[in-house]
Amino acid sequence: MTTDHDDSPDNTIGGLTAVELRDLLASGGISAREAADHFLSRIEEHNPRLGSFITVTAERALADADAADQAAVRARTGAQALPPLHGMPLAYKDLWDVEGVPTTFGSAAVPHATAREDSPLVARLRTDGAISLGKTQIPEFGLNCYSENLIAPPARHPVDPSLSPGGSSGGSAAAVAAGLLPVAPGNDGGGSVRIPASACGLVGLKPGLGTVPADLANGRVDRFGAPRFVVSGPLARTAEDAGLLMDSLTGTTGYLAAARRARPASGRALRIGLSRTSPFETHYPISLAPEAEAALQAGIGLLQAAGHRVEEADIRYDNRYADAFQAIWTAGLAEAGLPDEAAPALMELTRSFRARALARSDGDKRDAATVLQKIAGDCRAQWGRYDAVLTPAMAQTPRPIGWYTSHDADFDYELQCRYTPYTSVVNVAGTPAVTVPTLRTDTGLSMGIQLIGANGSEADLLALAAQLMHAANDM
Image (cartoon, rainbow, N blue to C red; front, side, top):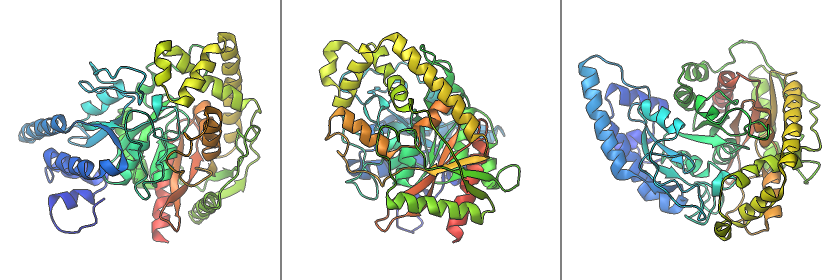
């Protein structure tokens, strides 16, 4: 964000939340062209340092903004309502198709074909008036918890560019945190919204499977019977901004209102179970860095100050989790139809895990799917004893660029599990979760907590996130 405080339009826009920007775009206080100009200028200035964008579509964005301004004049003249995200600048991970723009999937091993039409989520947000500024940086095929690949510079942390902003929505998170975007959609198959949101000091909401209709394009289970992991959710500087985007992602209303309410709908104190247990503990040495423990303690303090009861929860996980999750997490690499001659162009982790996925029989994958379905049910039952379950967001501070890729595939993967040991199991269970910043370290990095809710609790999670952030700001 800008640090100047003069009255120029750019600095006015730079200090706004996404909700405030939405209101000014709707009223005509700011034009869509002014908003697009501001954020494109920010991208031009800061993207060389941050690597947030793979592709910037400035010319098209400005044309779309001009068209939106003309449509707004006609709508106001005719007393017609504008779409809810009229003129809102957004960008999309380079896993989603945007009509007329190449989709790279973050990989040198596939053609970067120009998309003929929008992905369903992009179409949904375009219908609501959003204007795309480009495509953001991701890991290859969105697999990893860092945003580094072989086709573009890595995404970097806005506070310390030697560090990773996480992944796979790392480019989007860094862009929002640095003021290159007002808010951004991401998708989350093992923590890919919550990880970079936590790293960059943002609110990151992973909805339950099916809450965002576009996420059900391929059904609720894969062909082996495993639960679909990937869902779409917002990365935002405030819970209210996350609620604004959720209203559009779902085509409903109520999420922004819940965040503004800043208390769970029941109005009562919540019973919150605290767990530091990770399902990866049987395979890898999982431990909390002092900063992660401090962020957890700060979160406990904020929850208790808000009147909620936090108690230790005896949460246990099936020791088959790590193997079953990896088998299904990588199964898509065997399903993608990538020709063998393209394999040398893959990153080492992708190449190694693709070879294993191809060698694994369908029967083994069905067995892994069965294990995960059982674990999903067990998780929902254990977590369901509480109104929400509290865990650390990440176990460590943001890791340096190259921290993972300087090792072989297996240790790369182990380091990822040790950094983010609490997120992927929520994807398996299919329930919602939100990460909330609770601590800033002496070096300016953000650390936070994760709150896991029951199916259908996304609005309450946003309300709880807002409650905690307001309480933190008042302290």
